[in-house]
Length: 354
Image (cartoon, rainbow, N blue to C red; front, top):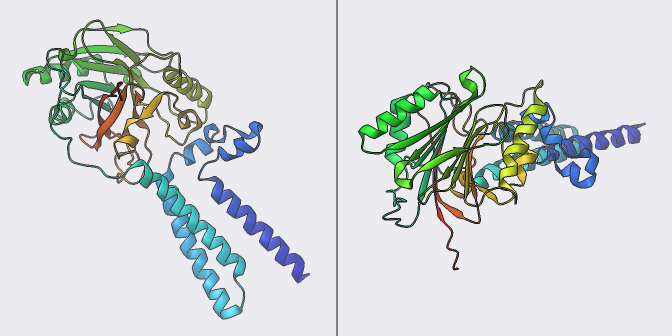
């Protein structure tokens, strides 16, 4: 009887250990069997995997508790082997989640270095600075947005949940500082949640708005008519709530499609994607790279802003064509009362001669 109990106990430990390890990347199951793929996009797993910092903390606390219990049982009752093994596995999983965050980057800064600029008449090193911010209809106000742009020498602003009126106000504010911006907007419905704006510095040359990806919320695509700038796409993907997971997936596939071979060369795609790099559609970005990761801040949460920056979810992104651009700097900014933080990245053209 005791032998049977021990076997059941070890089986339970192995099952719990396997489930814990699987939280590091649930898509591992898909590599074993194709029918098991897509777990990271299945509700409610898609909600849990988005909170890797919280998972790291939960597993760390759980490991401490289980290890303490195991030590007590080992010392006082000559048992506890299974408990100790489980505790060590939980500790390893906590370290694994922490390593993912550290590897993506946790080294934020106050501002970027001086902007080398990207100008038709004086291209410098060709650097381009991009700001992506979900302003939640002006909770990050004109002053806050303009300050983040001016301080860091921003050339392109992608503002989600931002009305055309607010975008025009930001452009007017920046014009007062001597920098002219073209404003492009799109709106899905009457709610500002579906409003997206892209502001492009006139110093990059003339831009025109073209057809953006087929997403349910606002999407803006602009291309250079003249000048030296990239193709810019600003997007806002619907959130992955239980009743709209299919719509969320369709949006992500449309966005990711721009990073495949059929997408434009020299692409800069930014916005609130409502997904992390742990969700299957963003695990393989094709030609694109995540500028926040390359810039050393990809582990810092952009939502919700009310929580510390090391707790939460990184769902705001700037993706760039890795064949055309390399990231040199990045930072996460927190201004105003939006529920999101902003992401600022600086990229420069890849040296095609090397």
